[in-house]
Image: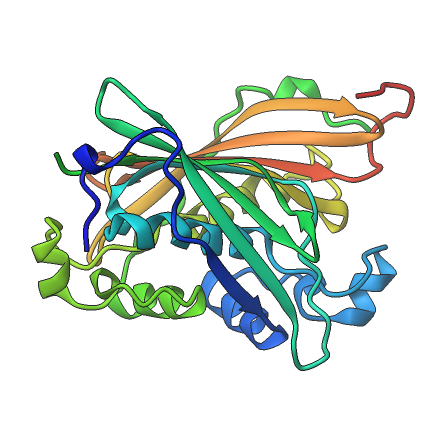
Length: 141
Length: 154
């Protein structure tokens, strides 16, 4: 399934994506990315440095939010530019359930050069966790 | 201690070449629960117009973080890494990263600011093939909490 440029208009909403995030997911992401900062797996350390609990890697949240866009386009290679601000941490308790990341997005602009700007909203525990998140995608004609 | 502004514009030597492996791409895609076949199956990637399996859009962080080590461990800059959180991140892809790429990264300090007691360090990682083909520009702002002079407000 591939979205084409001619199918897209400003204001279109992307299919929403909800992703559960558990401690196990954080350990797996730490291994895959090489980011072993203890705030992402060690509750004692996280609380010592003033965090409420273990928090997800910002880059993990960014990667999951990117899936909203790549699953919509059908081709992760369509994303030519992708930026976010990390405004609030995704807190991941060790309660067997973890956190839920709720992702929505819409087409913010269809540009003259054929690229499409998608604005992304990411929420967890009823609060926004990313600011100004957007991706620029190049879609087939 | 605020960070030394004279570091703005400083470029660090390129990292050792990093060879992008198929299994590393699969491992990263699994970790972000992205089941797209273009990360796993060369045939599916080719059907989507790529010469080989491609990495997810944030895979470049593996390279940019390694390259940041030179900056954050530079004693002369004086960043307290135990207080660092990620402030923002942007990837500009000149083309997707793909299996078989041999990449290296040059980091440049783009900006240093102090605001509301926090130090903000913006570093730009230019990821290219060893042959010099631009692949990705990754711009990261690292925030060291409570390390700057107080008194300035946002």
